[in-house]
Image (cartoon, rainbow, N blue to C red; front, top):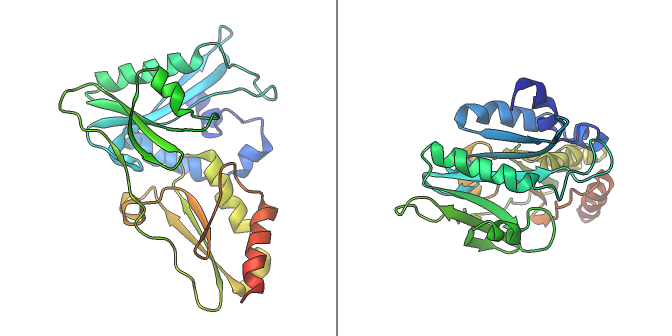
Length: 255
C-alpha cells in the first residue's frame, strides 16, 4: 500500500460512507502505531486500477491471539456493495490477497500464519479459510481461530482467555468501551457510546480501555467490547447510538 491509498484503507474502502467517517480517528491512530511494529497491508485492484479489496496482517505477538513466531490476519475484505466503489466479489480477489499475505509472511520468516473467522455463514467465514488449507486451532463461541503451519516447530495459536469483566460503580451506571483501533466497526461502537451517554450527566461514567496496549489486552483478555455495568452489549453489527442510549437509560432508571 502506498500513501495515495491510505485514506481509503483507513476507512476500509468505504470512504464513500457517512457511517465509516463516523467511526472517528481510532483506526488511523492504530495504523500509525502498528505500522512500525510489523503491520502489513495489501490491496487488490481491478484491470482499471480501482481498489476492490484489502488484507491487513502482522506479527501475532501484537494482536489479541496468543501466538509466537506467527503472522496473523486481522481481516480480509473485498468490497461488495453497489454503493461507493461497487461490487468486486466473486472475482478471486480474496484468494489473491490471502495468497499474497501467506507468501509475504513466509518470506519474512514466519513459522505459520493464523486468521480468525466465524462459524456462521457471513463475513470472515471460517469455512472459507478451511477451503484454503487452514486448520482449526481454537474456538470461542462462534469465533474460530485457524492457522496454516510453515515450520515443523510452529506451535498452534490460542485465544487469550477473558480474565475479568468491568465492575459496577456504586450509585452510577458505568459504560465501558474496550477499543483496540484495528476495526472500523468496533471503533464506530466506541464513538456512538460516547455520544449516547452525554445527556445522562453524572449518572453515567464512561470508561475507555485501550487494548492496543498489549498489557491492557492481556490483563483483561478482551480486545473490543462494550459493557453497560457488567452486561455486555452485542456489537456485531455495531449498535445504533439510540439503542445504546435506551440500554443505558434502562440502567439509569434502576439507580
